[in-house]
Image 1 (cartoon, rainbow, N blue to C red):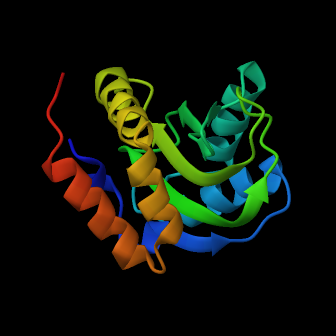
Image 2 (cartoon, rainbow, N blue to C red):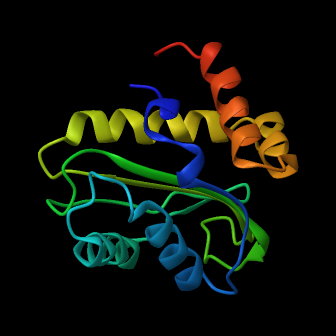
Image 3 (cartoon, rainbow, N blue to C red):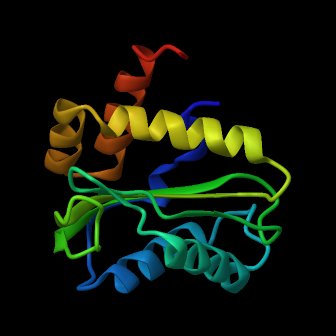
Length: 156
């Protein structure tokens, strides 16, 4: 499964507003919440916020990947955003975040969920890729950047 199989222009934002980690996570959940696979947005929110309590999903280099598993979705749900300004996300490297990828999977879909988390993390480790995402001006441009990068991606 490719990242571009689960992201759409409707689930991608540039200039996402928020002044805190909680604001951004809630905005991402709202962004993803209208997808058909979401059966209960508030239970999905609870799963993501519970996961965040375990350890920050601000993984470093200005990137965060809030995620969770729940039966509140019928399939994998995703959203991506570039924030309007840097957000203090309590990241592992103590750096603010501007790139946020939300990923929610069903409890019984652990394999695909982990593969997507790995793929997203691998892509986000590329400085040039992150820079292009930060410079993107539209959801379509962001999806094009993901498509271009995934076309060169090979499974490890």
